[in-house]
Image 1 (cartoon, helix red, strand yellow):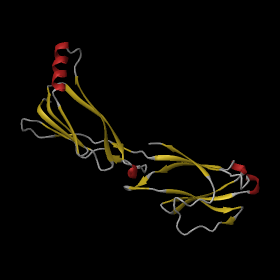
Image 2 (spheres, one colour; image 1 turned 30 degrees about the vertical axis):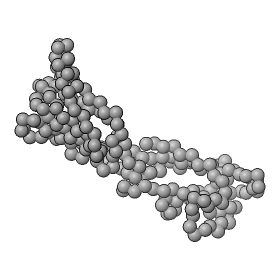
Image 3 (cartoon, rainbow, N blue to C red; image 1 turned 90 degrees about the vertical axis):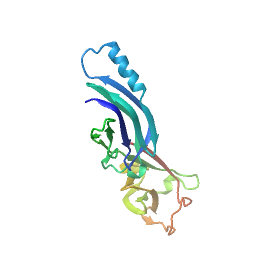
Image 4 (cartoon, one colour; image 1 turned 45 degrees about the horizontal axis):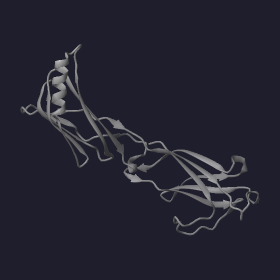
Length: 212
């Protein structure tokens, strides 16, 4: 279908941010196009006006003939608070409006999901508390203050625990994780009512492996 002086509007969806690297190219959809035909299409593609504002891409002055295709590629990312493993549409309704008054054309909206990370917790020992003095340490993984998993670190697991595929967010809100030491040798530790970043009962080595 021919597009005379069309305008394409491509807004990102709420969970997605435009990052950059917008590139556009034209393709002739027939066998063995002549160099003259390709040069003419390239000149029209070069005349397209590109605008990015308010998380929306706008391409104007699009002129396409029969058997010609416009391809736009760019980088975008899912906001961290939506990185929960669910599928989200990448864009709001994306349309191209011909300049001759014909109805606008709607594009299919793709969906993406991402946002898991792996967590490795390793117990570290200071000289003041030798490793051989402790048989086990009880640990809680908390997400937004709620206990999600309990486990024991000990010589049997080399004082290390791997936790796979933790979501970074849920329903548009970021998840804040804490690793909390709650017992030593089976005896509970008296914890402060409010755990802040400054609270430290023992030393841990925490490694994040980001799947995004």
